[in-house]
Length: 540
Ligand SMILES: *Cc1c(COP(=O)(O)O)cnc(C)c1O
Image 1 (tube, rainbow, N blue to C red):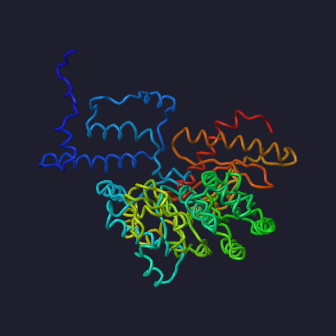
Image 2: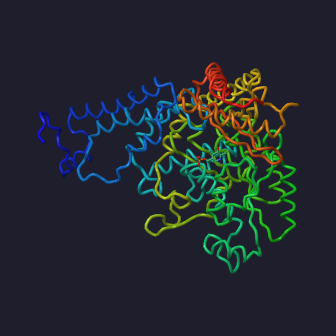
Image 3: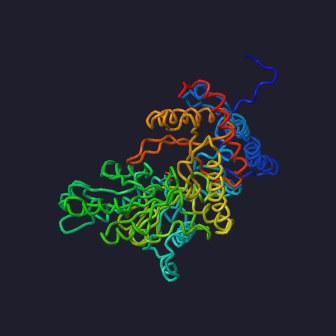
């Protein structure tokens, strides 16, 4: 078929290949490429800003039906300009506007504008810190960034950092994909140190867990952590060959912090059984569901007494240390042997940037690997002690962000989150239709809608009330999400001795989320309940 204005046929040939690997050679193509960057920076950013809603109302089934073809076209089908416009016009509106100040349900949120520039630099340089030969200065830069965060966490003395920051044999921490792999790395190191090589045994890393346990006469390995732990801990236990059931959940107290008396009883009981080894005790600095911080000092005392590896999962809460006002909430973290922290959470980095730190700069020797063609012993290649091989130079983003924001800039974000969450909690307490379930210790709180007639009373027993409120809150959260104006998440709090409770969960990290916006979210929830849920309910 012949068209009046036939679309230019796209072809893959040497000439175009040359072009895409070259810098824009003339002024005209420079202008075009700069225009594309503008489109990304402003087209996308304006879209996110104007689109205060969360997402367009469209079914996932319909969306999925547009993405079913699985063949790779032989000839190019789109130009860069088309790809950019399509992503802005067709993908973005159906993605989730996590930068909306009305999006307060998850740990993923708005990021500072400059992060886009920094990520572009990382892509443009394309360094690979796995080895010096592909990163050079970026490897030593990364060591400096790791030292800065290590110092924030552990606060050791100047001499320690002067000695270790660039010492090839020292490893203060490691960048990994995310918090999940940071927790895995911490437990990997702890496992290998527990089952280190001994006479007649080459260690667990070489001989495997079965041989290591037999050599030590150990039948069970356990990891102790609060029942509110992130599921990455169980994954790690699975990957490390301990089995996810090796993770023993310790009950929490009424504030959702690990009950240290209960922990003590479990540790002492396990210590009496020579066949059981405690691999690590984990304290959480900001639980994913409620933001609670475990009593880190008390856990540290117990770990020191019994010589157990003490890991702190501060994936969420770590950056609170940047706030002079609230750093005290994490007291005791400096006594950990290892700490997990996520850059893509409260350091406000783009996805994704996990980090794990070890107080002992030699701890990561327990997971060192050498490959003849890249990481020779004695070299400073960062891939030697790292779960990842090739990876991006995320340190450039974090290091630059620390320079641009200063700890003072981050403190403003942290303080805003904590203080706005507290104000939100007050607002929830004031409203008769709601119930605050867990008060915010950091910037996370949970609550539920609990209309008077469905609360437990002489007319309605506890079980029936709970069941009804659980169902109401599940529907409420779904209807609000589907309406697409605002978003809070939902979880089920499962705690020893308490019935499973469905709650709405708010995470306040966007500096543009104001108490007024939060009030409007509550008002929307009241409306949804009164107009769309209450009419269909039976009478209590
Ligand atoms: C988010 C989180 C994790 C997991 O982090 P990912 O980056 O999602 O893998 C682990 N622990 C806690 C406490 C978290 O909040």
